[in-house]
Image 1 (cartoon, helix red, strand yellow):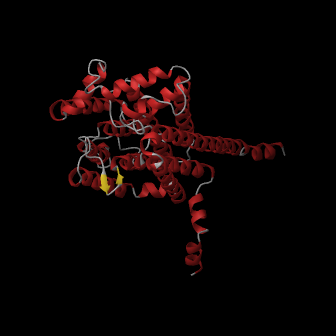
Image 2: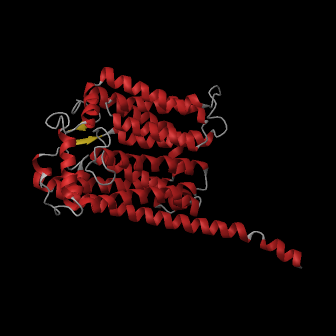
Image 3: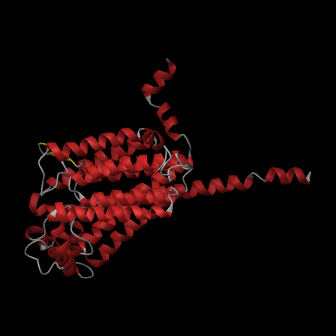
Length: 400
């Protein structure tokens, strides 16, 4: 009798662990959605302040449209399920590369960069969606080839994943989007490390960094001038360092609690891109260091809860994809903060969920939708099939 009781009690431990894991993931996904909502609401508030005196409600209304579309996209990938999205990873890569080439060769560059596809007043930035495509592709490949992807000579080894990701990254670089090139390259490499890449391949980013440095030196004098001006912005404050210098003035004048909401002096005539890439400079000026610290905390919390979802995933694919998407959002936020504060060269890198811009907002919400999908798959495996079965047209097909 004692033996029977002891045997029947054995399964209770893993069941309890599974319940605790599901509870932790559920708490993490709720917190992630709350943090995302706060960031978006704060971004809308600061966008109103940064742009109202220049364009009225135009940018604010446009951003609401982008948020709506991004939310619809996030819900869409959630309902589809991250595994179904990943199953088409090669197609997402191909579409991304075609769009990058179209932006590079068929549309006029803006400020020396060929990043946008424009149709009248409507435009998209393919590199933003390429980030998601590369994350899905690398995670899917490494998950499917866990034992061989670190081997160079194997047909399912390192070369196919490097070639696939490398072609898209090259397409981003050809559009003169160095910031996103570095971001996607970093995301790719560290995702592969998380998947078990041999540490001797750390030489790869060193070589790529050297190639990029040579490329900038020989073929991209505009980016080289930005690097030089970032080191001494006060020396070239009326030339190449104008934007960074005014960003530093905005942050410095904000002090602890800022000069007051809607009362920025730099946003109207002095700081270019005040509502896009440099919106955090306006945050620092109007709301002060305390608000900047709160923004950093929110980005940190986003990364923390997203990683909790990733590392609790029920599948290797979910873990790697969640890790890659988390890197994509948080590293972008870190780069934007570094640029605004003068800790890195000036580059076109928006603040996730806060800066004005449709492509970036949609991409960030797609990433969040995939993270929520990973969480729900851990809590309730196969949830997307049950949701799909409840759709009216699916029920008719099943009855037929």
